[in-house]
Image (cartoon, rainbow over all chains, first blue to last red; front, side):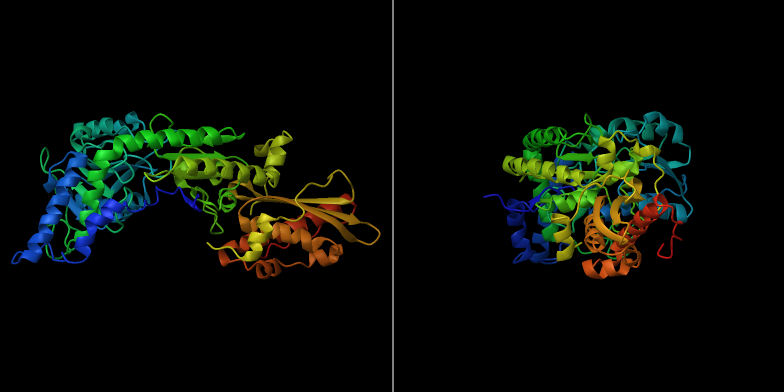
Length: 404
Length: 138
């Protein structure tokens, strides 16, 4: 029996894998020590668990365990990396390059950097969500200290040309950071081969617990340091003070270990399921995939259904937990800035749904989702004046809409 | 956001979805909102000239659940009202009836605008002067 609603919002967060919970349990109960307590077995046990997690994480992204700094999540890692680099490398320059389609944790941090005297270049993206390497090359200056460009986009799944970007940053003597939140654990991410100097990622997007994440910081070629953004006990090589969240870290470690073992099989299965979902929904007239079809995370589909509004559509697909590029929750009605950056018109951005599949998504759930979305789109189009005009051959762009 | 039962009811079972023949003199059409704002409402009324009474009302809406419910409710209210009574419908009555949260008040404003716009269209078609469109809500 299919349980409703069906969760297809796995880019927002994933459920905890029972095997991760199992690994964490002892550290929520009997093994409760502070990993910084050096004088007794309680502390040693906690420290040992944290060190083991570091190895599990390092194994997934091909780094040295010492290069992992634990944080509360990807938002903190993004903040710490960008602000920390800006402070640490102030002597060298004050220019940072990013893109317009980053997560708010990067964009708003960059806005903050601008307020405190930094210069930030926001590179545009093409209709597939990809930056132009020539644009990046042209934006590099002697003052550029950091290029920060996300690995895979949270709304569209578009994967940026990370290796090429890293090479350009390095050629100009800048560091390369990436927000790997959606990519780590889903596709192979190798910080050595990719040329990544700093990376933010989090446990709860890969079947781990919420409230714990990590920042990868390169220690060799070059040795990268960031200025701490929180003062305190000097944990995590002085870069991030605060008592370590041992059960969370154990969970992140286990999630990474499982990802390493199962990623390839998961990606193949989810990619096939995603393609089936997408193909079926594209049989609806006037529906379009947003983002790059070739360079995309395997578990993500973002589709616009023209002439129906996203929030109304979400209400119609009440048996699915998905998200929409329409933010019709205020009078300003701002649609997704990511979709707009791809060049989508506001109405098409308002008409989008994002599907995020997980390790736990089943074929039966996808079958149900296909029928449910098709029914809802059809019903809403029958109710939509725009659909009627389209059917009548009226060019909607030529209508003078009353400003609302 | 949780929708009220009444919004869900109108969304699931919208009243009076459809199209009236806008070439008829007795039909007034209001088209308000804009696709880029995520809301477009088209509301139509058919008026009996002799009694100045609205005999039929239809809508089609592109928008969120609250926008669909606001226009559906408006068509229900319009039927049987005189044009003057229809003109007196205030968006806050829709807000109260549907228990719309503050962020959805603009949906009711749009429905009121649609009513006035449809009446205006009917008036102009029948040689009456245009209404002074109050924009005090905006």
